[in-house]
Amino acid sequence: MNGPQDVGGMMGFGPVVPEPEAVRFHADWEKRVLAVTLAASATGVWTIDAMRFSRESLPPAMYYGSSYYRIWLEALTNRLIAEGMVTAEEVAAGASREPARSVPRVLRAEAVGPALAAGTRYAREPSAPARFSVNEAVRMRVINLPTHTRLPRYVRGKVGTVERAHGVFVLPDTNAHGLGEDPQWLYTIRFGGTELWGVEADPTLSVSVDAWESYLEPVT
Amino acid sequence: MHNDHGHNHHRHDHHDRGSALSETELRVRALETLLVAKGYVDPAALEAIIETYETKIGPRNGARVVARAWNDPAYRDWLLRDATAAIAALGFGGRQGEHMVAVENTEAQHNLVVCTLCSCYPWPVLGLPPAWYKSPAYRSRAVIDPRGVLAEFGVSLPADRQIRVWDSTAETRYFVIPQRPPGSEGLDEAALADLVTRDSMIGAGVARQPAAAS
Figure (cartoon, rainbow over the protein chains, first blue to last red):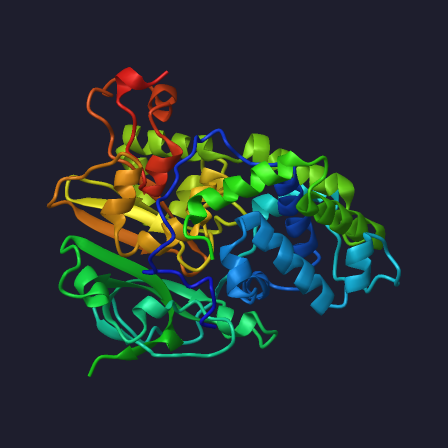
């Protein structure tokens, strides 16, 4: 969706504020949000893509006015309610009023280390050869859907060059919405800065995105 | 909408610290209590997650990878060819680093990593992303004005240096092998790792000079 998350090339957010490497969190509640989000996601009720869609579905004013862990909190709350795991009344009360729904699994403390070390692999076995070749010119499709996508606005319609083929990966656009994995070839597509930003752009700049095959079309 | 989002985060913090229990703190506590009561979340698992990312997984992991690459040309080649396997050989991997790609800064090209769409970041080697990496200020400008962003980190590159920005739009996770600083010849890997900053592995900084290390 053309939501608030898609900020590449926007202006007006002010300077970047570096911070020391030792800073891990800015408040204790941020740790809780991180842990609760990871543990709740480990139930397997939703995919990582679905949670990203919950975050980018927040109203733009809320998204831009919130710190990142606050965005996580809002999105997690919305997702839990949407999945029928909690009710809004329970969230407000901080207490359980209804029976829990069944979930595929619960992450126990002793499984945290192995689960984080294993991660979740998104690569799949190819069932077809890659349609595009390294060094081939491609155009990014112009797609505007209200659903999840990882095709940023700033590259849509732009011509780039295939730099790498990574293999076949789960497609977020379907995986976010319970429509299956639809695994597709994933490529790194490189664009010249002037292709993206015009002739005034820094001539030394190039930018790449990783793009699934259905985001691309041949340049004819 | 606030136009100084980079400071916005800190403003929240001050607010949160300003009262005994802020609205945010109350909401987080309530949600955690609810999820535990429902049986969806094991409270001991929460502590294990926090402990992992506070004490075990952070940018010193990545610094070890870079130091090895600086010190061992065969390892560097492996890292550039199959970063996931080369990093796993040092004991790092897993969540948000399942599909790693290492890119190398040279005299010809400087690499900078961003996620314009959210906050994708190579957790096993760099830990949790810093607040600035997740800020709209960084995410919006890294792809259109990387030299301006770098200047805010005190980094100024030659005018003819190619700037390559990697927007992490998939589950591939990028990290940067910074240039080895002059004067670091003969240092062992532990001393080399001390020169490698988190920001240098994002491309937002450069490695320390040996004199400034330790």
